[in-house]
Length: 101
Image (cartoon, rainbow, N blue to C red; front, side, top):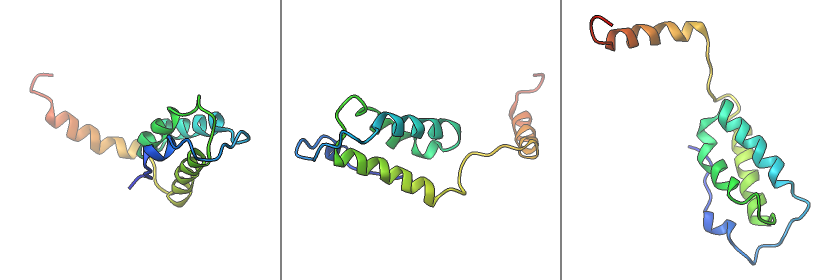
């Protein structure tokens, strides 16, 4: 289960501002991770990406940290590839192709 947070909390204008929080860098790195090996965090990271142009707040920083903690706690999960994994896939794919293709 990927990390989740209420987007309404990110819009909270009463949340304290954190100008020193590097939201662009954090979200950029999370986007890279989501693209390369961890598609399970793509939705929360895309949600966070909507807020990189806004001034960082405590709520936004907490949401970023939640995604980071999730990644650390599930570091042995992700997308992997080996030629040995490709062989069974090719057999199944070829069996599904129409005859003569």
